[in-house]
Length: 209
Ligand SMILES: [Fe+2]
Image (cartoon, rainbow, N blue to C red):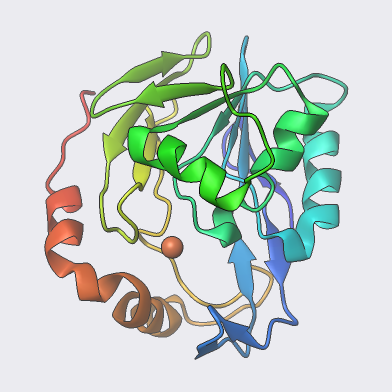
C-alpha cells in the first residue's frame, strides 16, 4: 500500500497480512500495517521503518519514493521491532543518514543491533526540540510509556501532520476495509491502554502552531 499524505509526505509503510499473532499474543485476522513515511523537502527524512518480516516490500516503497535521492535523517519514534527493524539496514545502505531519536531510544540501539557502530550516527532530541528540513519543521514530543519508555511523537508544523507512533494505532491492515473503531479499541486495550496515565499526559500536550 502506498499513498501520498500531503504533497511532501508519502506513506511507505507495508501491510502484513499473514502474521499469525501480533507480539506472539494477539490474533490479527485482518493483518496489521507497519507505518512508515518519507518527508521530502530540501532535507529528506524517513519516519520509522518496518518489521524485518516485510523488509523487501519496504525497501521497494522507499526506493520508489526517494526516486534516486538519498535520505538525510531517519526519525526513530519507537524501538519496538515492528517500527525499528530496519534501522541498521538503513544506515548501512545510506551511511550519511543520521538517526534522530530520544536519548532513551539511542541508548537502546545497541541492545537491538549489537554489531553496529552508532557513534556519530545519532542526533538526540528532547521535548519540543525541532528539526528543520527546509520548508518543513518537525517538532518532537516525548511520549514515555506510550508504549515503551523511549517513545516520542513527531509533529510536522508545516503540513500539520502528527506521526503518532503507537498512539492511535489499530489492528487490521490498511488494505483491509473494515470498521475502524472496533480494532482500534482492541489495539488500545491490549497495547497502550495499560499505560492510561502516560496516554492522557501525551494527549494534553500542545503543538506550538
Ligand atoms: Fe509498541
